[in-house]
Length: 331
Length: 59
Image (cartoon, rainbow over all chains, first blue to last red; front, side, top):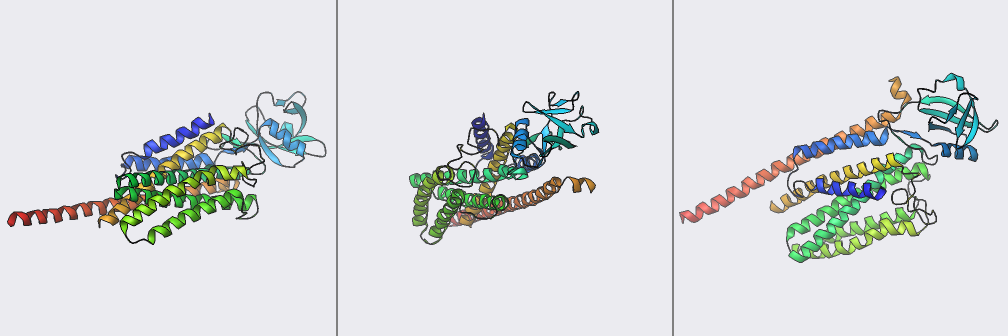
């Protein structure tokens, strides 16, 4: 299910992104569609409330963290007869029960009281304008939503580098300069998205790990990747002869892409680090791993949608970059 | 205003939407400019071709 949603988002993004072609001007409906989709994407990412399930509430109680959490009520949660709330098959007495009419309410805020080993209802909560919820993880809280913006930018940069490699191979086979321009433009947009992924990750790291830069394996690998592609631009600008420049750039981009799967997907998973999915965690991370505790159905759908939106945005920016480069060459 | 004070996430949403709107308008502007330049280059190259063709006929 997870793989299907993610793969279909990327494939659909590529298909719609290539309408009408890579270099032709995009129709107006296509441009306005991206505008509207991105607005929907931001609303979908930012507004849903964070809700914990009953077993997680029980975990919070057992760990003794005095934290106010929101849970989604079901028919069997509340027992009005004996003023108890059932969380993960354990009955806890409720304080302040009489204050709230729980028949009309779906979400309640509860807080565990260590002294008398009970949950007290501290208030009620409504769904936001979007009636869905995301999982509450105490270590992340609202910061979990950054994942839906941060990971797609990194994945789109991989797509950009893949395209740059494909067009480089096409240039070497056909010796047509337009493929050199396509490859160069894709690498440029890829670097832009890599920088975006790095910056959004740094902001997240500051508030989750305490520092903007921690030399975590994934931070190190993205840094290496940026250096590799910065070196490409250095190499390209240092050659004057256009034929030599195109040939060497194509060879460099092909070799550079062979490092991308290693730096993005493999290295951060075989070495231990702070990032989710690092070695020793037992999972491949919230997106590629099998567990659903971080990426539940709602968050997975939003992630797929965000990936789709970012793929479309990438194709729009790539289209503009290629057209500018072609104009530059013609002039 | 009271609603926004209680639901701070909506402030983040409004700011994000404003940033996106700014980026979107800018990309649209760049797109239109490139289209205009493409048309100018096309007209320019056509007029050059016409001139060279008429020169051949005169000779």
